[in-house]
Length: 226
Image (tube, rainbow, N blue to C red):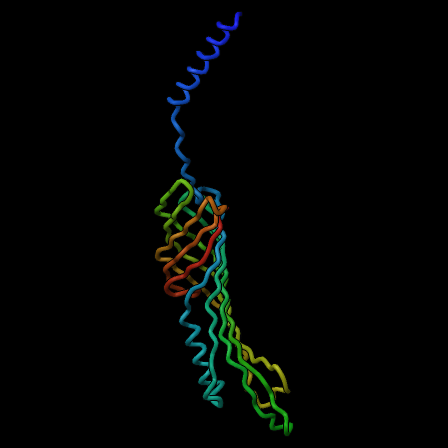
């Protein structure tokens, strides 16, 4: 084959390659469903529990009546849990919630030991552990993220404990607080939305509006979907 024929075939091959490249269509981005069957979502956040304020007022009135300036420190409920999608629109999981009410530290004279004082505070802790069932009734899929709207219910147990904590001194004359109650707990999610982004390796945010033991009103936080 002489040089002219070789160059002609080379140009002809290049021309066909250019035409095919121009006619080729770019494949659309795949819409990832980050809440598909067998996906696992871990989440943690915080909410609002009005019962904490009620318990704080009870401690203040009944146990700290000798200290009119007593303050109660209420911690917002800390919620952590996971969901396993047994179906694209159905998940089961577990959720744990922890919160507390703590009085500020007070000093009381030890009348049995002249010249000595007792420093103390009261603490009430609330925890719950529940199984959850959620139905995802609307999903909005984007090329690199997913919004999933859901409703659900959680059932389980809660534990309420109260204690007197002595930080110094003997504790003589300080009224004790022995409280330990375990009972059924329920949380209803009226509507919730979870968002997950592929670019952030499945991380996103969530917001739930519901009522129950863990929270009343809005609960929000972050989630991670595998």
